[in-house]
Image 1 (tube, rainbow, N blue to C red):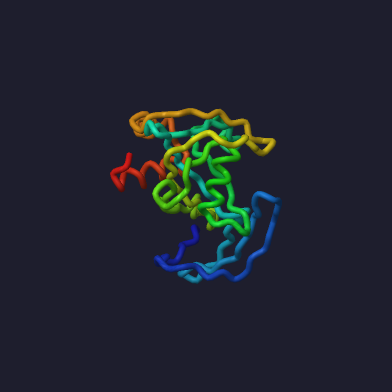
Image 2 (image 1 turned 90 degrees about the horizontal axis):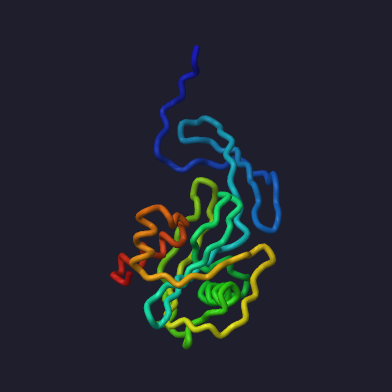
Length: 193
């Protein structure tokens, strides 16, 4: 005879215990024992992020967007994405985004102020797996003025694309990276893309 589950209500779960199953510099795997709203116990696996994500959608004086292509082993494909990474401990999110932009591309705004670098918003990277989030900025009037200083595992190619190309690439599924899609959505909401 099949076991019948008690009806579940839409309420937060109660965490009874947490143990760390794995940890390295990029992530941790946490196993929670939780009590569901219907009183049943359940084992849930989460990922602990290494830090807070930051990304920048950058524009040059012609209105073109600076995009990256990089192999991403998790999906086994070369993907379109924005320059970005993790914020350091003493950096503001904006400083971290600009640092990642410079390190990965060699570009930065000619002048840095609230008009040339603006905060767009944040997204949960995957709320089913953990509380990792990414903060997205837009930067304008990019100029190449820095040496590229990428991590050893970063093989990135840079591409300047027009806004209409990005919109069509998202629509057709060529672009599927969550941060890039969210950046485009934030800009479209504000009528800027």
